Image (cartoon, rainbow, N blue to C red; front, top):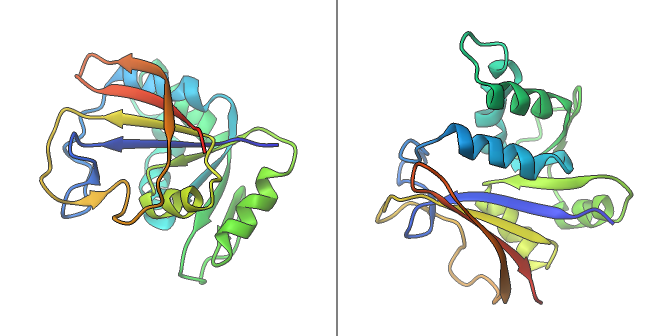
Length: 189
């Protein structure tokens, strides 16, 4: 059975993006990217919403070839290019291409089926709505929450109001030079 790993960056007050939907206030770092690369090494599939996919896909396919690309960027870009992408979208215009599959409906059923197959883990990046849907059906095995030292005051929440109660157990923490802290939780439900 494949594991589902949800990786999300949040502000201290629990937002994955500011009011405008931007991630600009999250300061990145080489050690952070290197660590996310370690976490993702066990995953061969990325699951995301369309907006997150477009954000990732506009940069990572060629990031390792850019002048001055760091070792971590090259490594992460190579990993990204070798993964299968599952993109959840309400826009049915996209057809599956290369190593990307677009899911328009029945996400929970699709993921239950994918999770039951043999293979490497599936990682969700951000995508609060996608993660929230899977969380409601108890399909997430590991939560990596990266808490950033910034307060937005409002924005896109990681967990929507009215989310089903979940009891999680903290099993690992990591601190980074930029003040970010990564917290690894597993579900106890």
